[in-house]
Length: 283
Image (tube, rainbow, N blue to C red; front, side, top):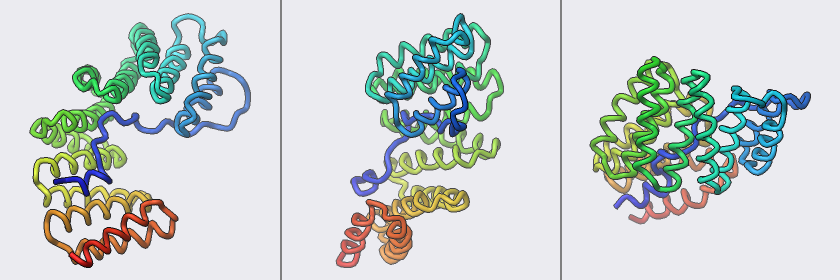
């Protein structure tokens, strides 16, 4: 069974697209400034206020007609509506945004919208639709030479294929996704791709490959200064080492390192790590 591993690591297909830029301080009430604030609110999880601000933007002169400003406001509102539990509304708004971007010929933004649509379909457990939309975005990225967009879509598709139980396809996608992420030099995307790959390997019974991949994830996080994420990743690796590979001493040492970091940050997972150490001590 993989229960111990899965409680701290699951497929990330259907997770939100990479974080939007942090908003600049509010300096006026132009559409550009309001949309910057909306991005920040979405990042912070304040989806209700984000939706309200999007409605304000849509009422401004800058949003009249089929403009990129209107499309962006619709897309952000669609994402926020989906995240606050209104996926059908969100999908409708994202569809409106997509139509405008298609008319404007902005393929990069079409891809971004499709990624958001795929996330909402995945959240509704409509995996075939999520996969279909992701593949549409993938095709656009390949045609346009958008390698970063391709890496994002492939990373999503790893999780979606894994969630559907098609681990052979998930591993195939993971190979290309990892290669593209390394080509474009996007460590954040590489981290996400490898995290999804680790789960696929665990479900496939390749626990040695899983622990090695989690080690790579941890190295990326450590290099980026993401101390808490690093600690959680090495703990995930410790679970695999102890529960599936019989490497108990290495697992204990790794967990002690993770525990030290998480205690320093007052992280809520501290109790879980302490219980795990008690378990391996008496096993």
